[in-house]
Image 1 (cartoon, helix red, strand yellow):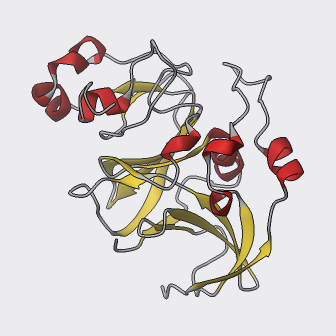
Image 2 (cartoon, rainbow, N blue to C red):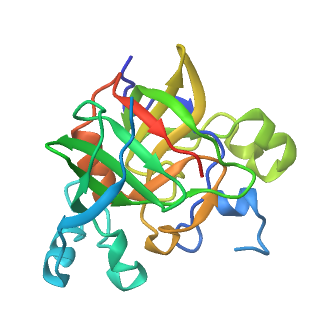
Length: 231
């Protein structure tokens, strides 16, 4: 079920901002004028210094499309990756999405979790429930859903898919969420735009900084459980 890097899959309808001159999710969605028992997250046990942040969020030159360093001045320090106390009965590896607080957790066991800052769905596009990772892809092709093209014809040139690259809405890594054997059209995807973290910018999908997404992706096999908390 794992996709090839160049497989063409819908990504749901997600927003993001990419460098000037590239197509953006936000330009599609808001127009050019707008540019188990789940526990409670507790105290951080592994914060990140500025020096560590500059290292962890540095460039990824060996990627298929080299990824630039994150401008960490554009992200609130609370959204940097860290280890936190998180009491949960979920199995190690389970991903828990907390859209209310703009966090994604990976359960590590022993009452701990890795916490990542995220962007989430805008008002009107929030959802919750249990899902699982049905497939995953590196540098995937992005295909806008038919419903999106009908609403916003500017997406039509990409009806057969946008090639991978830094301007592709899915970014470097994507985890596809499934329920009962069917793709939900929702994903956890990667973004190079730190200013989107901590904001509601998508149509239900969840974005992590590429450096965080590479970390989560490497630890997440297909069939991993995903719990999306109510917003």
